[in-house]
Image (cartoon, rainbow over all chains, first blue to last red; front, top):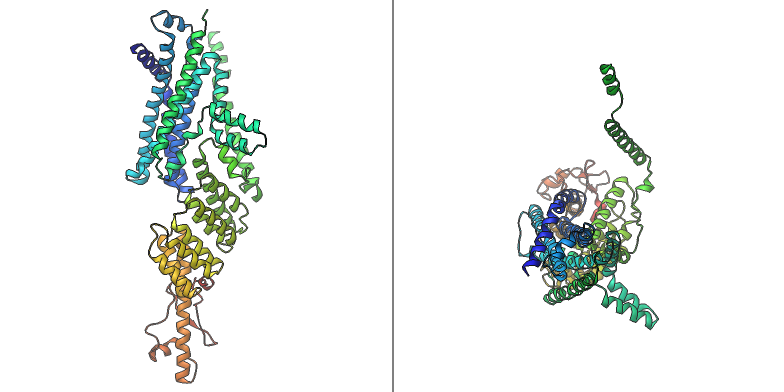
Length: 258
Length: 300
């Protein structure tokens, strides 16, 4: 367990060294600029817009980090041949994959936490006060983190089998499809063919459902997410992440390094 | 020899300086071209072309960021409405489609229903003059936000003010008054509209609420203009009654308002809500002063 933690911490430090957290500056500028701009050109949506924009930015920046760092997590170690050093030590492959995964998730958690603080600072600036009703966005941010944990899992899996370029394409494609699963089910229901319906429904069950974590708009209106949805999404993310990381471990265990 | 070489080197353009020069020139040039294109653009190209008219399609394409997209579309509505109004165009052809997209992307964006309906329903040139479209928008809002009583208030207002359909207006106010959290005056309004729809007093009650709750300066200013017109119309009616009474008593028309004052029919010199004195026309009827900015057509 300590070896997994060591790899995770190392991965986190590596991300920081690669100046991943620089995106926070862009995030701060975006929030401040957009707040001022939209306040002057729109009507009555300042606060809603700030929440929508802030949470969308947290999600988009997190997504970019998850995909672009995630796809090179394993590949880079193989390309630089540092994998030989690591695996020659008493480190199991499963520990290596778990450490890499947790390291990137830790980076995303820290990144998201800092952005969340920035977001609440901007919200306070806009409202001049913060109340209990302002806790609703935290639920959406939690869902964003769950979604990012899944994306890292997908990117990591592709990273073990493919090049970064292809992994990025596959991960992003899966992310897009995973956001349209409810529509996929809808198309299946509308289809006259039983085979198409079964196929589309089957796909919607098998593929990762990223759309289920979409709650930004809801919380922007101060609506709280029902407890059951919080629980169900947490469980879903945990199970599906287990599937993805297990698959990555299986592939990595079978892989030969020459 | 060495000095000559150095001179030659200094005259030769340094590649870095050359690249910087090209960058600055190209950037400045692109800015000039861009401004020229903007100046040349005619009114048609200024219109916000709605490339995707289906909010559902946009929602799918938004990948979970539909709330942000809805806010952007709502901002486009505000910008489009303001620009067309300033330009004196009163067709507002894109208003309906833009509002539909914004409210489909975010069915809980209440401001888009409320202000959008005002933009749609107001008579030209202030608005699009499409109360039926405004009704449809508000009805969609009620379906998506059934317990939000203010949408019922807006529905009743459009029935009352723009369509002069007082029975339906009363029903809308009544339905709104039954929603959780509805203000008590909704019941009063429902009763008042049912009993005396079209009366100035009822209109004043309605516009007073709009003025009190006006979400922005534009709406509050519009409500103030309507209230001034209603007050002036009521005052002119009072003056007409006083003039008729004077004629009945004196057996002749009054020549000045002072005569009404001396006869005890007025308590003060009559001025309209903006402070401009009323005038007595040669036909013996009271009217707004020539300097008055009040538009009496706003009263009904």
